[in-house]
Length: 443
Image 1: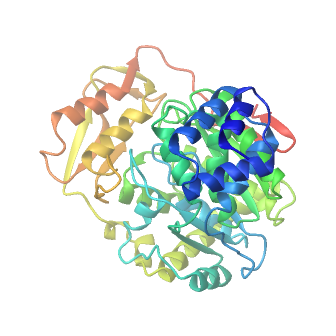
Image 2: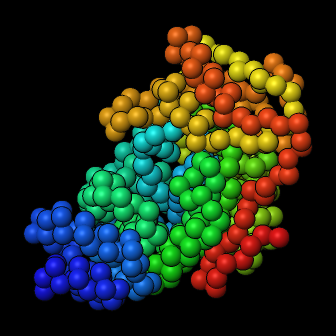
């Protein structure tokens, strides 16, 4: 078997066998297949695509290239959730305790952020003392004891994916649905969950810009999960404006706590309930979405979800008092109000631009090794559909100093807002559900 023959075959639009794909992945990991040949194959995939069987084979080959977590010591059907990313996306901090409070074990590995704001691990490390590294034995024991653990990704999970993604990033082949889908799912499969729920974002603050693209990606990932025997579903959700109001690590932890108290933003709460309901049904704890949602809302109202959050934080060395005293979280010393430039209705918010503003304040990483300031970020005061007067506050910057919250960042936030004299029509947050049976759009 030769790499050049497989490149030629894919260039002609012919499907590769599982053995041929394994040959490419294993050879590339060993260094036997050079970057230039793998680049040529990735470009052929970009133009010719892959069948569902090929994509599943690529996913498994990458999952098997490094450590695979066997979650069998954990009782019950283990669930996991993945988001394709977005501005203000703190759903894991809410969904983990909420689903665990329903008796569904959540054993999750999460990553750090590069760009806008921190990842889930960065947000958790805003909690004083919180440990994101546990031994495997302690990880299993904690999920058995309290139903929830979230740790940083192992350094040797899917090394083939890391290597291939770095290559795609510099060869203009990132935007290939089979390659994106296999990249995401290889990590989820290697992490060992029995059931996987995906939150696929679409809009200005997301990688996928149209609903059709998002549904195609979700369908590819659900197909992979089905092919390899994992129960998988996906929700397509809007990211044309930030999720919730807080952008920045400690600020997002505080908003997550508010949501677990039943006092969170409507959009954030609705998305967390929808994703959690999928997890509860796939685990067998509820027979349908309606009963799952009813169960979840009861856990919020009774305080059981917040109690689970306290237990989770304490189990991983953090200070559980933050659940009742969120001012124990890191606080930025300087608050700067950003004023609307004109009167009218908020017509549009460029979520990506607000994410960039948060990163400039220090809430995210411009480079892989950059340090994160957990205290900084911004909190929106107006969102799409809200009426605003000229000079009224639309957002508050949380900064380390007045110099860091400079005029350029203020103007950047102002320019992210489109204010019009006409009241806008509001786009729905939840757009569609993708399962093995196909796509069902919310009415």
